[in-house]
Length: 388
Ligand SMILES: CC(C)(COP(=O)(O)OP(=O)(O)OC[C@H]1O[C@@H](n2cnc3c(N)ncnc32)[C@H](O)[C@@H]1OP(=O)(O)O)[C@@H](O)C(=O)NCCC(=O)NCCS
Image 1 (cartoon, rainbow, N blue to C red):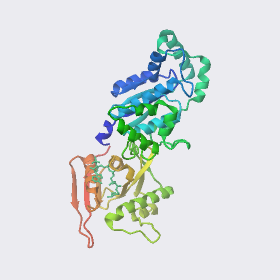
Image 2 (image 1 turned 90 degrees about the horizontal axis):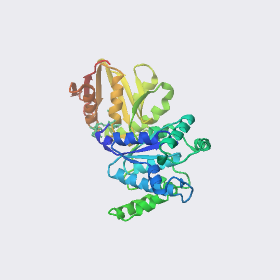
Image 3 (image 1 turned 180 degrees about the horizontal axis):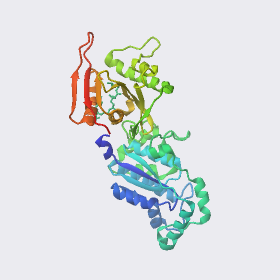
Image 4 (image 1 turned 180 degrees about the vertical axis):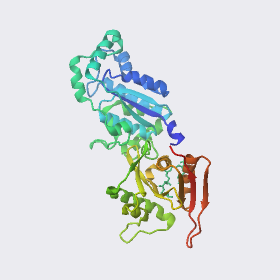
């Protein structure tokens, strides 16, 4: 993975019921990741007292407070500071809106879910009320079950950060949804200040639903973790579809035209699908669980293994997916590797050189093959990896 990615600020979303251990974990995360912790309970207790939770809709002060803290969080992320948002975030929509806002300012986002058993929860609530009443709100045992019914447990997509659902039909963007849920959000963004004009412009763009917030380009999809999933011949369609994108990608450099039916020939795929040789192997590449490309390997006539086709979808290029997938593929067959490419295919010489250096340090070799009649020669990179 690229070094720059780890420097992007992160918005941590603490998700869990009261007494699930959110604030304790939030403190740890804030210390570990040098992040700003925003715990609305702390603010609400000192600003409004503990008599009333102020959560009635539509005017509950709790939501105004949270809205201002969201604004603060976004400003911190813009400045490159990670933030731990210790809100509880019971609904998927709240979490989706915050994930969207984080992405729109170029930050990554992690959902940190803390499940808690009902009995453990109730005993912690009682313990807290007995020993540190000034740090909590009064809670009744009768409230626990209705809370559990309302709470939406984060699903696998949220936890892996892979799929962001669309906003509800009534809202054009997640920002529209968020400004209804946290009415002080827009007010906070509209405050005059050194960035007033910029924020106004950003907000207008955002409200128009064209580009989220002030992002110049849409956020890149999540590129980690990268995995290989073996493809057997029963799943031809997925390789066939991606194979067409691959051939189309190469068609400019190679001067290939589509057939009359609009499809491209794909000889490597045909060899794999024919099933004649079990050593023709194919994997889908996935990034954060989503389809990200494919890799196919074949035995090399001079011994060892060769790459027959390698493809990363465009939305994930230059995020390290190709490099990680190549390393995984190479690890499946320790020994000699020969990888052919064409120098007129832009970027691949640099790419395969990086892959070879990852696999073999400086013990790899690059040479041009025999010159065919009508085109420049193929170039071969060779190296040998040790078992295990
Ligand atoms: C070639 C290909 C697989 C690279 O995949 P990728 O996921 O974008 O590669 P990575 O992000 O892992 O790149 C790793 C390094 O390779 C080099 N690299 C990759 N693509 C490059 C390009 N287009 N130009 C220059 N260098 C490139 C860079 O050094 C890069 O590191 P950096 O981004 O930190 O500078 C992808 O562009 C692709 O699928 N192309 C179309 C199909 C193809 O040509 N396959 C190879 C046939 S031999």
